[in-house]
Amino acid sequence: IGSRAAFRGETEEYLAYAASKGGLTSLARSVARSFGKDNIKAFVIAPGFTRTEMAEQFIREHGETKVLGEIALNQLTEVSDIAPLAGFICTGAMDHATGTTIDINAGSYIH
Picture 1 (cartoon, rainbow, N blue to C red):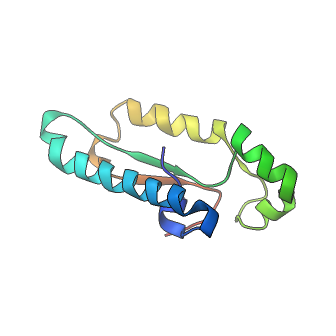
Picture 2: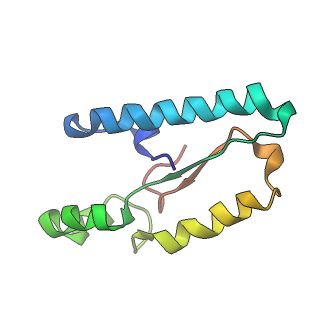
């Protein structure tokens, strides 16, 4: 699981987090190119702000309105919004998209 932080750029307190997610994205691309003929595929799902235990502290401190102000939709991404994509990738139906990063971020970062 990656993050929009790999693409969007982040504030000082999240520099290491963003860099690690950028590294994961690069690793997935390299794995896809290097090992595809060995039937190894690599994908990154890059969520934006998702309602998780980790996110709840931020919501308590800053308010959900602040978070909603940064996305294109009227509700936060939930884990249940991400799980179907992970399952679909596992079916093999996306094998020809190996190396891809797929954003699920309620429009908080669009590229």
